[in-house]
Length: 497
Image (tube, rainbow, N blue to C red; front, side, top):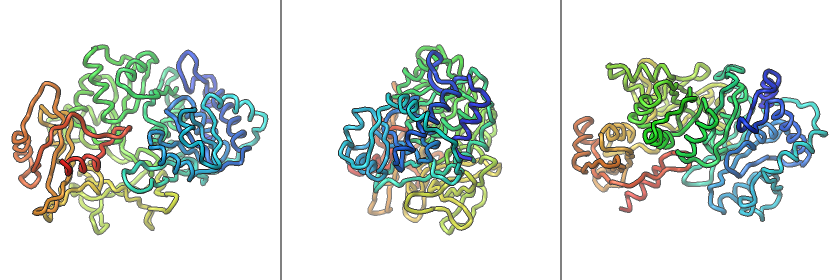
């Protein structure tokens, strides 16, 4: 199977159901399939090697995902927020290619050879033109379906390779075919170059759910669109959820149609989860943890697990609100020490994962070991009941003296302080200890706290070696466009300060 099979099954099972767009002018599943087949034939006829997109998310995204698959070409959504030189270098790497981009984006790489630029507004006409060329499609599960470039803060971005077999395996193991009711609609507000943007297209189609895209996130626009389109499902990153809750708290109107809200892409503060449970008591919350290289989600904290943890007086159960849940049945997860040996429950180490959906492949190399295990470079631990806790990237560990300290553990304690809205902990070079623990916090509006107060707060709950040597009060923490903390940027800023 390849990605086209997901669309063909949906188009056969519910041809007249809306697939993408608003209730007023959306495309049905039959129409989406027809357009994707025509677009695929036209793209294939152009003799290129990739189909790329440099634009915000829109209804063009599902058409391109499936059109590229019908053409037998990798789909490459590129980060339109990159600097011009970086974007030009990335476009050069995928030439010859058709790149779908609006004029203001296309002008940024106009001099790159081997690139055919197509405006998003032209896709419908191209699909009609290619309809006469469309023939039988031969699915290829080994074909590269999606190529996603990592957004690292240093070095050349790595091209993560996702083959059709990896993505299809994820969809089939995590979604029920046509499991969505006819009135269900998902709000997609993450950019196309994020794995969550791709997986939302694939899983929504297989489930038979309508997709509604929000091109540019603001909490007010998100809430307004969710209400207007009667959105029933959504996926957000931690910074988005906190800002959405602020809007709901201000206007008190809630989200009447919303049934299911998943979050992921970074550490979610315990207090934000509790606010969400209180403000949206009838909404099923899901914490989804995954990576680009694993075709999206590999562990889930489900709705009932959220409710059980929030209602429990047992600290071991309650702390599960800070976990990412348990592994999907289709994958295996291990936590290993520095020697590569699996550790016991409760011990920290690096998270490894294995399963059919795990690619672990890049343009330059494969990162799987001989037994198929992929090192995530995330640190964490499993409790005795199999719940996974992610403490952060392996590179973020603070080495103070001979002791390895987890920033996440200290951040969780700081976030429990009633005056702290956001917190991040990094290691700053220190002549005596190697690295000194430094914290950056954003205070709750109208609340105050001193450096000494927060240091005492941490010391009383952890120990002196984990107490920040400095606490920096900032108006905001640096995040990228998908809500991930830019820890290296923060570390550089605090070291300079």
